[in-house]
Length: 491
Image 1 (cartoon, rainbow, N blue to C red):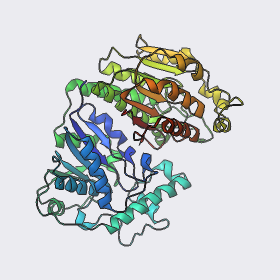
Image 2 (image 1 turned 180 degrees about the horizontal axis):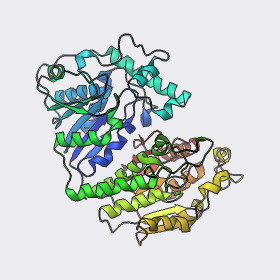
Image 3 (image 1 turned 180 degrees about the vertical axis):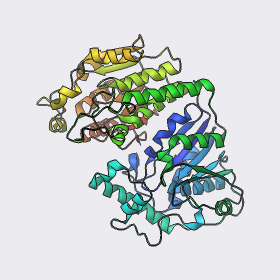
Image 4 (image 1 turned 45 degrees about the horizontal axis):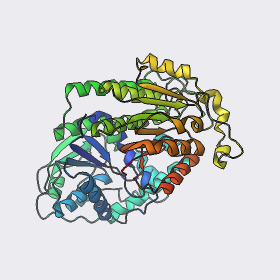
């Protein structure tokens, strides 16, 4: 596999994070790299100061594009507020003399002179933001059910709404230096009646209009496959037949591993007490499946596929490992990616105690003691023989799969691999996460990925911060789905 020459930068909507485009990686496959841009104050950049204006956001995005598109064919897509930022970023880059985009794709956004946002009679103060999102069919069910999460999300929307209300459009002095496609939604109350002449005035050139099916405004998230296929056609970035076949196989693997096909009921837990299958919970990895071979959800499996394929394309040397595998589903996915692309010179390492979580000792990290995950070992502990049988069921138990049974503190210091291209951590606890980082990160090749499944858990996140601080690691942490995160080793 070779380094992808083309890259599509994606900019999310108001209140949204880079994870909004998680469903785009699969459809693009090996045609191009999908690069969602995290905006300051959101997702993995939540600790950064939010932008003071749309123009400031555009300058930041332009800098990222300028750095990462060097020597490559590039395009940029933005949805809703992200479309406005993309439009202004392309203008910034044009002013700097940067090689033009192959295409600007503006999605779900009226022309800039119309100042996209809420209706004049629809303020975003108080509960207005949630009402606005509900009208657009854009309040995720898992957030709507959680009052605290809903208010946090609403505050992000209010903040971005202020940027939109203060935006001032400057007419162009000449044609934009790249072609433009305008995506609208079939049932999007904001863009379903878009007049192409409005966008043509903003870019001083003809535009192509394309309509996408969807229930509301967030059609790029609801229908990523159709949107991605349309964008690929617009850009002319098509995949070879063998690549399409591999993509279909891997998509089926993800649906089978999460069991969104047969919809097995979850095992009730404190944080997900339901006992009936819920599509949103399963796709997001928010339940404990009774039969499925992974609990990480579709977006985090998309991320595994994306990272494995990226190291293969870029020729990053090393094997793949997950520390903490439960029923083995994520490592099965790693092996499936290698099989799909005919890779025979890399191993998948499956590291787990195969008896559950360790019981905290007197010197354990205090947060690990409070979390008390060992109390769920009746469910979390999966025997080695069961995991091996799960690999065998997919026809993927072979010499390219190696098992490391035992507690991390005992097995990882002497783990026999020389180099790693992918290190995925799913140990939940501070001590388990630190053990994996201390002993395996030094083996991670430059250009390799670290994926942290339980980044949302404080003990795990603290271990990541402490390790990075201790070793001066400043590589950008990127959000996956609001629960997991990852970064790429640059040095």
